[in-house]
Image 1 (tube, rainbow, N blue to C red):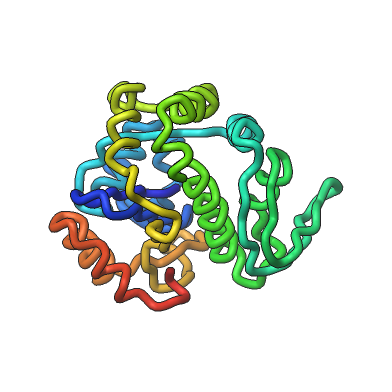
Image 2: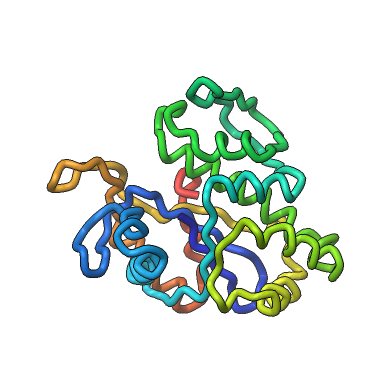
Length: 241
């Protein structure tokens, strides 16, 4: 689960991962891991839950499943990532991912972003890998060759759209508007980070959870409300980012 924030001056793109086991209040259901919101109430409850967590409205939503993820990656001709940690994904069809630059196609890309058992810190490294993939995907989409060329922009939007479910407000017109507004953004202007947390723990009913950091979450909410997320992100340590 990722929250994307575009500052008012469109000077960059901020992508915040929310770890799936984050313990939080789900409206009408009490405390649960945040990923339970989708099972309990679908996209509307998921949006309501994240809004309650970060303290600001969410304007648009995009959802993709596993098959769509593979199709989207292949439609873009693969996605380039800089893999910080070499690993072997588990299973009979496991795959080795060397450190350094990689170009991932559909099936391999899905293994790359889903693997957690290969890492000592499990979900934490998986989230970092997901961020690396998202950085590569966004870098390809916001390149000057794409955003500065209406024909290529239309082709890219057409390649992506079959694999995503989006809210009714995120139509072709709105996508075009956002693309034009972001035409000055470069790959280096993409900031990736994770919602700060207090590590892992156990809930009252015995579940393994990611413990929320209430003070950091409150600071995040204030930064989003005042459009000062750059200062918040700059204050995070390297491990969190």
